[in-house]
Length: 586
Image (cartoon, rainbow, N blue to C red; front, side, top):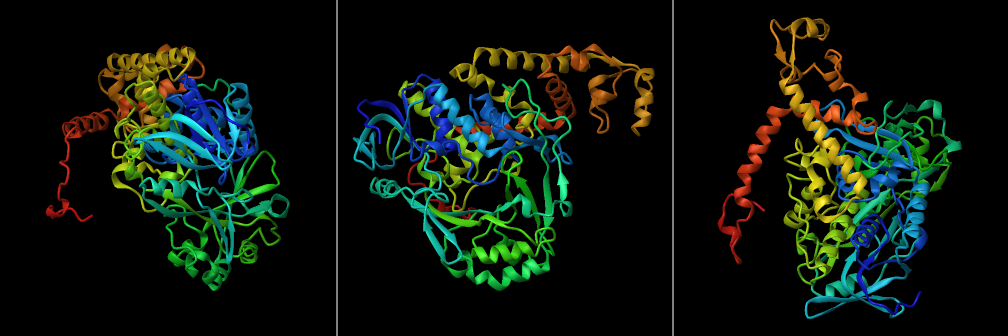
């Protein structure tokens, strides 16, 4: 371990997605930061699924990007396939998702850290020390003390991590990597309340052992869009994923061996992710379902290693293999690695402020799975916010506190610190009551003001996004005033099954019809993509169209938000007896 003789403003423990964002944004804000990782070669590693984004998660990546985060930008350079999910539903829940080359991703991250000379030290943090209620230092396993003004713990699944594969148990934070010992005990000694959670990952199989013609190929969008506003050129390969399906034979084998799964044998009594159930849970709890979809996804470009999405399990390795062999197209399947469950320590997030600073120790922040969350995007979001707020605290400036009506990141943090969590928390669009305001397409319009104020984006990006916002508003204003005559639009309306107009009508009024879109309007320079900067043209037209089409609902929701603002600063008295309120059940 490198000997550390100097003091740092900020120490970030853990080089996963949360730690990475925290360290990068802190350095961007001029903070003298040190990143502590147990293994430099694992920084930025995607431990589980080879994808970034998805339902609600895609919105969070876009928000991260506007606030100076790096996940979306790194992902765009490593994308194998890009797809917008939920297109059959309203635009509020349309969510971008990218299939990622995992090896390229972590190498891209590590090369970038070297390029910007971010200080990284290999070592295991085993303790944090405090003095007069403030963070004093982070202590490594070799006894080295790193003095700091602030520290961010982003320990992932490494805190007393224990892997389960059937009856087999392995002390590890991730397969092949040692667990972290000492931090939990240190924090408990400082008065923090800890719990235990479980998550899992599916097997990895050999590409050459799969009968691909049996599966149903799934490709990305024909006109893919990047996750990052800073990506200027985006042309992913569009490598397909393939859908296979379990059957009665599979389910019979699983049920026959279910007592050998640690979740059912009693070896694991901690809570797992409700919305990412193991195959054992799916078969046991949804016995009426004759089959479950398995998506076979490449882990990197043309990889021999394939991720079996939908088959998270902790059954014995031999049972896992037998079960997969019952699936049509997988009769000759070979393992590269079995699936497993992992138990790890977390700390109840109600012990945090909305800045992600702990209430117990000033200057100590938690981010990621240590707070009970699940997922790369949730971790990155917390890492970014903790990094920004730790930096602002060091500079003696006001913190960044996002509200529920401003960002999914605001919903995430509010849910964690107010509701707490007893199971791995995952973000969904259904968790955001103001999701109509929190679209993936308007993340820049919602959050750019914070980037300007705090200096989170470079001048070129700020100017570009500023111009995009102004051009969107200009187009909305134009369409609100622009009059369209019957002879210009009626033939299009008829072909769409819409009622023709008898007199001139405002373009915005026509756009509010469900089947009418800008592409149906007569040719006009203002609605021509060529009129705008190439990378933003489609987004400007789409966002203007969306704002007009949903304006009634958007305005109604804005009125609701204004009503709730009067309660935001209301303080609940200390010692308030909630038991006296009969309508509160929990």
